[in-house]
Amino acid sequence: MAPENAIPEKQISEFVTRVQQAAGTNLVSVILYGSAASGGYDPEFSNINLLCVLDDTSLPKLLALAPVVESWTKQGHHAPLLITKPELERSADVFAIEWMDMREKHRVLFGPDVIAPLEIPMQFHRAQIEYELREKLILLRQRLLLVAEDEKRTWHLLLSSLSAFTTLFRHALIAQGQPVPATKRESVKALAASLGFDASAFEHLLDIREHRAERKQFRVQEVAARYLAAVEQVTGAVDRMLDR
Image 1 (cartoon, helix red, strand yellow):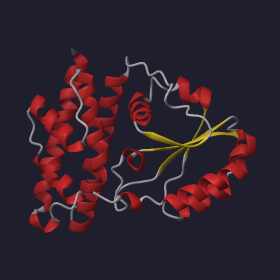
Image 2 (image 1 turned 180 degrees about the vertical axis):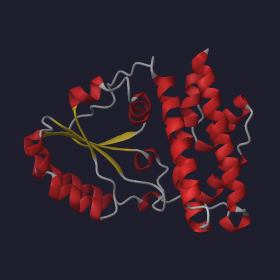
Image 3 (image 1 turned 135 degrees about the vertical axis):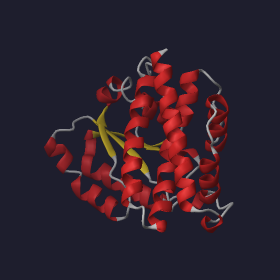
Image 4 (image 1 turned 60 degrees about the vertical axis):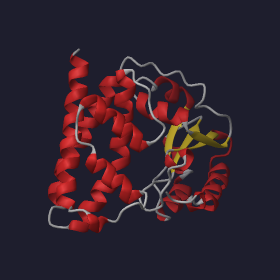
């Protein structure tokens, strides 16, 4: 696991200062979420995820932030999410996965904590899990074909997609009403025990990401085949849960 000091705290702090200056009173809050807030940050694979809550998201107000966002992305980071507080509250039904995870682990960098009080209706949670799984499964198939002749790019695809799928696996456990383990590895194991799929590809990839194993110990196409099969099985199982 990457050390805590791998998180680029100085860059984050500079971004917050600059966005405050650029937005002025239009800025409500800045929230850090994702692996940098949960303790699983790895500079090779993780992103710095920021949410900026604004009073006004009209184009002139957004353009005032453009130089700050451009500078931030040139440092290799993803652009922040920009949203108003009413939008945040009204979108909790369709973004149940994202807001649940953000509510569980986040850090307030500026302004009030607008995430902790969020009420998240769960009636569409399972449907969102299936949608996200199906979308990412289709993209995974597509991208595996595009990198098929390049071992290095195949490894990168598998390792960079790992967090998204382990998050969805954890939410599949939530949808089943099961206790949710604290780690990605234990969540994958628990879902594999529940649904009966081979989780070995996920375990190998987690070993590589956590520097417990090296890529050369495995054949990438074999890992990719087991990884794809596992995602297909979980997606099918979530679909059957919806039918019930």
